[in-house]
Length: 227
Ligand SMILES: C[S@@+](CC[C@H](N)C(=O)[O-])C[C@H]1O[C@@H](n2cnc3c(N)ncnc32)[C@H](O)[C@@H]1O
Image 1 (tube, rainbow, N blue to C red):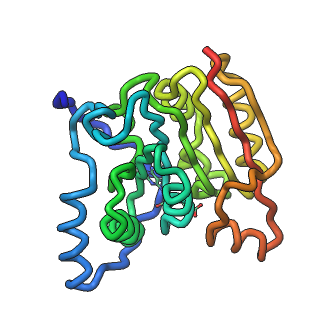
Image 2 (cartoon, rainbow, N blue to C red):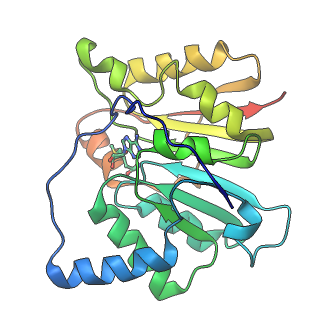
Image 3 (cartoon, rainbow, N blue to C red):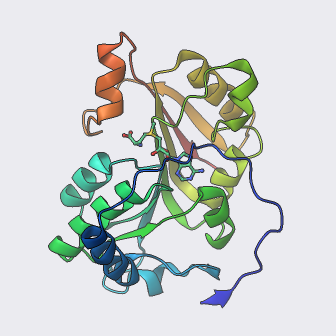
């Protein structure tokens, strides 16, 4: 894999740093598992090297901000021939997914503990079968909206990494976030798609459950890269 230059400008943060810590025992396990199952930093990723046991052409899906990993783990269990790269900034969620990968011995799932905006330059153009963004942090106040991960300077970067025929799937229960995504995707001539009925295969996570309890409905938007 080829070493990369790193950006000197830190990206705008789309997440809040939380201070929850792992116990010393869990931290030790997390460190060991991280060495085994996380992706190396600062290299251009080559999927056939990352997933040597999966036959080409490999369908690689990026799961951005997987939180506690419920959806990632459920889909990984159902789809052993789909390669998943999960990216999340919070160690507790990362540790939970690493534990599942380790116990199951999964060769088709890898984890990156970092800001997706730091990861993206390492993902080759037109190399992904899918980008999943399930319930991104909503940043509902006007003055916070520039923090949303699905924003004007970022969505095209996701599309750049999708291969033609690949899909961008965003689920949110914040109506104006869905409108923002729909507008940004309409502005990108490489995409076709829009709002779809909630796919039955998309696992329910605690964020969706919480939103439903608070009276919000999930909105799924799926776009295919057509050129
Ligand atoms: C509201 S939670 C949703 C979690 C999960 N997708 C679900 O549906 O349950 C959003 C997650 O995205 C993560 N996140 C936000 N911005 C991120 C970024 N730039 N890179 C990686 N993860 C990010 C947060 O840490 C948080 O865990």
